[in-house]
Image 1 (cartoon, rainbow, N blue to C red):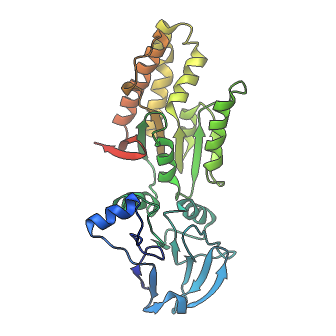
Image 2 (image 1 turned 90 degrees about the vertical axis):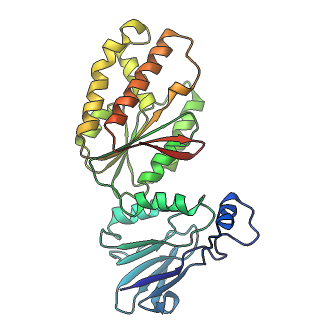
Length: 318
C-alpha cells in the first residue's frame, strides 16, 4: 500500500487566509504554504475508497484490502473497530497525540502501522515544532533513555514532559507531590494535573521514585524532583536540623541517581531550576536550593537528553 499526502493541513490550509496569529505569520514570512489534507491510497483519493464511518472518523479499506483509520477533522479522535489492527493511521496529532498512545495501548496501532499527521494547522507554533514533537510521537523511545526537563514555576515543563510521552503505549506517571487538605490551592493544582493525564496512564503517587525506576520497563514520567526532595527532607527531619541535612539525605540522593543510571525504562523527569531565582532567606531554604541544584547536575550527567523550558519553549542543552 502506498499513501501519498498531497496536503496535510487543515481545511483552510496553513497559513490560513486572513489569520493574524503568530503561527500563520511565521509561515507567511518564510514563504512556506501547506495545502489542505488530501490523501491518495494506491493512487485513489481516500474519499473514493471503501469506508465506513466510526466515531471521529472513518475505517477505510485500501484498494488492496489494507485497513486505514482516518481522523475526519481537527480535534477528532477516530474510534477503532473492535479487534481491528490497522495498516495505517492518519490522525490529528497536533490536537490529540494522546489518542495515538491509546490506540497503541489497545493494540489497534502496532509497530508495523504507518502513522501520518493530518489536519495540521496553526494550533502548533511552526513546522519545526511539529517535527520536534513528531520525533517523540512517531517513534516512541524504548529504554534505557533518560530525559531531564528543567524550568521555573509555570514555565511549561510539566506540559512538555506530558507531550513527549503522549503517544507512548505504556506510561507510568509518578506524582511525588502530596495532597494537603489544609492547602486547597495546592490540592487544586494536583487535581488539575490528574485531570489532564490520559485515562489509560498508570499513576503512582509516591516519593519512592527509585523503587519505581528499579522495576519499570516502559515509559515513566516523574513530576517532579523538587517535591521529591521536599518529601525526602521531611522524612529525614532535615528542615529542623539544616546543618545535618546534606549528610542525612545524601544516601537517598545517591540511590536515586544510581537507579536513574541503571533503569531499563524511558524516563522523562521534571525538576525545578532554582538557581535563577532569589537567594532563599533561610538556611534550610538555601541548603534545599543547593541540594536540588547538585541533584540536577548529577542526573543531567547521566541523561541522554537535558532541556530547559522557558515560557513554554524548549531549549536543548548539550
